Amino acid sequence: MSLGEAIAPFIGRVILAWYFLSEAYARAISWDGTVSLLALQDVPAPALLHFLALTVMVLGSFALLRCCSASGPALVRWVCSPSSSPRMS
Image (cartoon, rainbow, N blue to C red; front, top):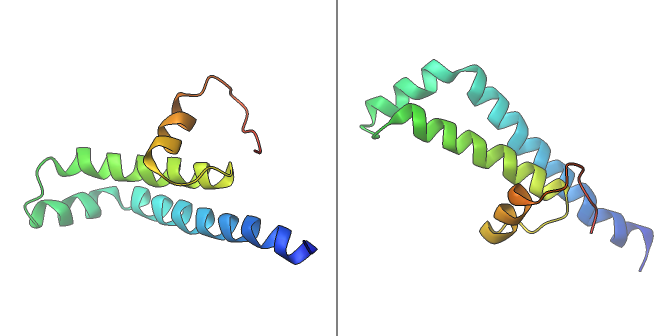
């Protein structure tokens, strides 16, 4: 395996994580605007659902950086893991 084949997946995960973290940051900064847009679309409990969406975006980004697959069970395993420092698998 060449160096490019070994590094390309890591670079892809970093780029995806950066995208989701930057979107989560932008949506968190414009909290009131996003919640009001959700309320206009008759979304029930817009603030709670917005918070949950931001949480999923942030945790999913960290799961990508930690080399987990972004599937639900892997994300739950990562959130519930007792270790405080990220491990590279």
